[in-house]
Length: 213
Image (cartoon, rainbow, N blue to C red):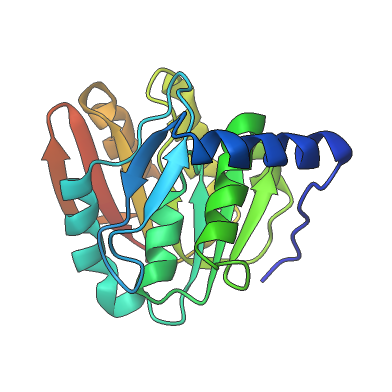
C-alpha cells in the first residue's frame, strides 16, 4: 500500500470539534450501514450539492456481490462523500480502506464517523482532490469505489482512465453513474479492456461492478 497523510491543521481540528457538537444536535443528514459487524450504525453527512449516498437497496446488492472478496481486502473510496461505501466495506471485513474527499466540511464528517465507529485502524482519510490523489498513488487496491458527482460529465471518464492507466485495479471497480452517462461508460470499458460483471439500477442511477482483467 502507498503511504497516506491526513491533514491535522488548527482550522480542521477546531472545525472538527464544532462538527461533533452539531452532530450531537442532529444538525445533519444520516445514512445507515446495511451489513457486517457495524450494521445499523449511522454516518452523518452535510447537505452539499452533488453529495448523494448510494441508496440502501443498491448497497445491499453491491455488498452481496463483493462479500466473498472483502475479507482482508484493500479498498479505495474515491469521492467518498458520506463514506458509506468505504465504511461498509470495513464493516464487512476489509483490512484497509482509504477514503478520499476534497470538501472540508464533508471530510470533518468522515473523520467524525471514523472516530465514532472505531475504524481508525482500518480507515485512512485523505483530504484531497481525487485526481491529484490518483496522480501520486502507485499501488493497486483490491476494490475501488467510484461515485463522482453526476453533474460533472467528464469526471467519470477522466477518473476511470487514470485508474486504468496507473494499473490501480486489483480485482473490482465499482462505478455509479446517471443513465445519461451509460454510453460513455460502455466506451470506457471497451477502451480499457474491462468486463462488466454485475449491474443493477435504481431509477436513473446505474451501478456497475467491473472485473479487472
